[in-house]
Image (spheres, rainbow over the protein chains, first blue to last red):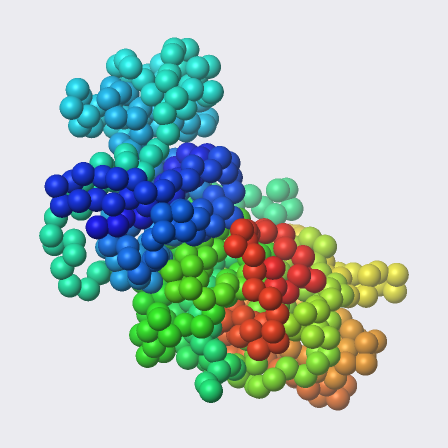
Length: 219
Length: 344
Ligand SMILES: [Zn+2]
């Protein structure tokens, strides 16, 4: 089966096309990692078009879509998720959401990404690569992050004060994280329902209801 | 050959709108709103609106398709609001529209939200007379536009220099202890009141003021001062008269400037749009003054005056018919997209 994989949880957007065999073996046919910063909305659909062309795959040949659900900066995160949901809906494909941290660097015990505000998004994994805690968002001083740590070194070096090996979300990582769902025959049964993709925001919206309104004249 | 089927997306504020239009025929207009979630904040919270857009997007597309009785594969073009609006909110609709266009292999048109407010009237009243004037008033905008060719050329004559008209309604409603959004409760209360009871100021109407710009901040403050003075003196506040007099001041300035702009530019067609165009006094006064000035007034139904997906599809449909080139694949959103950009 051919799978389209997307992620916009970090400043580098990812689009990839992979072939997944019934035994779970994954062959990545094409992948584009675009350092797009805050321009995910501009650059994601062009990247999807490009990887499909690179892989020589038509949209009609796809069997599923996998997307990262974050955690990550909200605005960019939503771009990837709604793009995956819309492509899947338009083509009648199942869409699977996975934790983006699970799709970063297999083998590491801790994955961190930039949560801004002096905090990190993090998750820890056992020796088999199964997530044992997280995803969460915290100040680095408040959590124990076992070595080795992978993620985004430019920010992590200063914020964590320790060595972080650079690692990004990959197509193979996204498919690995979605393996159980891709193996579930129910995913492909009957008409696809509207995708309930719920982003891993981990933070509430920044808004507090006013307790009382000041008189306009003194505001 | 049937006319192209256009799917339109609107997410510039708190309404998730998806509409389908064929030529100038409205097929469906599906809407989800997060308004209730913003009420306790007294205004739209952008992050809450953006989260709601994402949740509502695919289900709203499904509703639009089923109401229109068409399949996604029947769609010939996709149109989307590229701005102006709240960036995070715009980006959800933009990304969705780009993805549907890609997946359905049809052209994509990024359009201007304000021009779409004008285009929607074509769904109800047929081809727009050109040139027309357009008065667009809502919680997010207050603009007077000259429209020589809605597909290619829209000129801004004036706009608010401070608050949007709808914001003034929200703030005055708060002063009067009414819920958010303030337009409907003020309109209701004003029906029992006397619009000439209190002489509230008309902003920017002096001889040396910009003839087509608006200012509602001074009016809002004047209403608040007037009400607070009564409260301090321990006197009852005549809510209906305050609402009616405030509403009269807003309607008076808006219609006077719109009619003057028509006269000055030799234009005899005026289109109203935006949520505040649902205000009964604004509609009545616009009708009265346009009739007296020999101007044909066009006002879409209240449902189409507020933000919706059909208005975006309507403008997209026009751009397709006019042979305007589709947007580039790297189309983005622009929170302050200028009005002279009709299609991006
Ligand atoms: Zn609007």
